[in-house]
Image 1 (cartoon, rainbow, N blue to C red):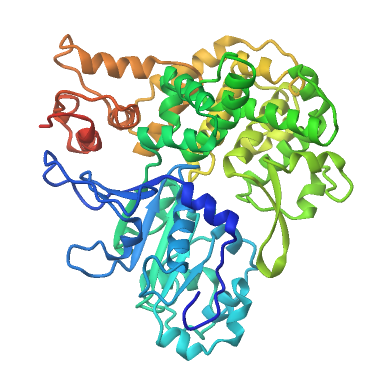
Image 2 (image 1 turned 45 degrees about the vertical axis):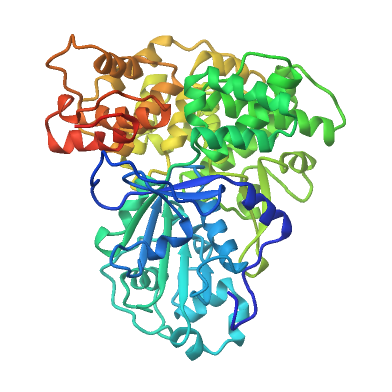
Length: 580
């Protein structure tokens, strides 16, 4: 908030520098594609932050509220993007540019309201002004009439997938900022435009949770697609200051197709740079990880090594011994991660930590874990809360807890997956199937990445990396093979998000069957009657977009004449020289 009032929303110098270096792209997905063969020029705000329209035109993210062809304001903008793709950073960059006077100066006040902090507010009735004071106590000094009637306001709701509110749009109408109502009623009436109809709203979400907002209430749909190939290389060169080291790492990343594709996710680029800087540069070419799970395991190992050196003043290079030394605190954090993930919590209090055996005031082990895995934050009214450095870290550790509980036959820890009964013992296949069922039933997709990590940890190679934390147990490979067949033979028509997540699950299991099948369909005329399922069409489009492959020609109807199916291939038009 600035201009007429004291500045409430501020960034320190370190945050400003960080945001100036971030490369993030938003791709506008507004309506149907038009004139798909037309070449569009690129418009950039600067080299750092761009938005891309569905037909391929890059535009300034700071203009998301004014992109309407009729020159009207977009009252409500909904931005979706997968975990770690840069949604929150996009929001921060938008507000930073506004606060520094570089963009959107017609807006007088911007209120950032992250859902993860909204979750901490007790369920009681507030007026809008009282709710805002929970986040910005300085508003108590502001004249309410001036604020809501004379000034242009914008509200940013970050992380819809993290919300524990029902977001029921059938609640009673609220039209006055002074009228008390539930949190759900205040937020839904803001989005609908009943409350402060001139206010601008920006909502970010993971894809699976985005459908909680009825499309009729959204003026513009956008999607964060992450780094382009050019941005990936630029990121590594900025992150790793030594040019030779940066070149080594870029070369290693490009050797692994799956790794290179995943590096379009900024958080994954950060973790990859951290891991490869040690493995490629310091260890001179140790075999590099190529899956998400492998990368996160190595990231955990590096953090344990740093902890031992910095806080315990010990040098331990043996992986098994390193994990064994830190096994207790890792498993405590893993239990915390899972217990809170299934509750939908990503911020915790000291009581939550104590339930898992972590005493932050006396636990010396905790201090070392804080650096890049776990942190303490001050939120509403300077309340002290705790969270993992990124939600994906919580999801990885949650999967580790589940797998460790399975190996140690602690079925009481797995009751979440067996609500109807308490089995004494189950096969790995049954556990994975139960986990898949839970993911399917999740309305906001908050278990998608957890499932990928769980499958990844089930591989024998990853269990060997985790020896010292996990007990050594011979698991039948038949369970994994059976699960792979289940994914391959899944004939039900899945949503694009679910089918893409299944594709990623196969990648975590190092199974290239779907990828090879799609390539065969693309590269040969031996299958005149070929027909991809709708889910495979989604996977194909995603594969082509992220791989950078260029097709000579794409005719979506060749793969499936069904409108709902071939329509899912349309985004791949950007990856072909000619489209029919």
